[in-house]
Length: 327
Image (cartoon, rainbow, N blue to C red; front, side, top):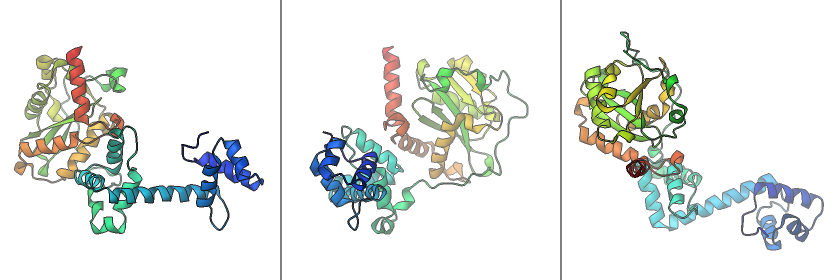
């Protein structure tokens, strides 16, 4: 018997066929390996006007479960406060639900769909919870995007020479680099992201050029042991002209994306998009202190990620650091 599990969509299709063929509820229970009480409950609660339709039954069951979860969440003040607090920290409903599941021994306390439905419920609208969601954007090309460095970059190694293990994120210590520009395209933020753990770092740049770029890159990477800084993948911006200093001073290999191919370091681009929620375009970076930027980056690194099985980038990075010490 599999009665301890909920009736699934496939079984509902079978129930519908068997009922239409005139099979009794006990006969259906026997054919599906279910208890009579489970089949009776399913047909009784998920029928409308005395008729059982599998598609409608799925919908009714799903709505009932979501309603039950919402009531449970509202009756549990700790759970409710946790969800609202994480929304305000910028976590997505999927991240919140995944984190709850991870720390409740595999038991789903509340689904991300339930959180979304609460956000768009009358109570959620009254509390204006939608403002905490990441807003989608139409595809667009920036009017003032940074162009490839016209002088060319000496000893530039194309990304095609990067190993398969790096591309598949199987090896720790390989980074992606980019720059987020401020108002007037003068000041900027040098960002670096470790590919395997999605650990994110950032330093303010007084000016977007090779001198300040290499200083920021070295300042970030020099904090970590050699096994945590094996390579960096850049775009072709002028701030990366002095990339050879990384190999000379820190033993870090460097690779470069194809021109106008930002997607080749998409993880960093994605995190820069998250950073833009805190530091919108045309922000005057001269009034942003490094300590405040550090606080923002810390908050981003403490959000659970689905790709990390709902660990945070900070947790994943620290685990890798400990493993590299043991090795």
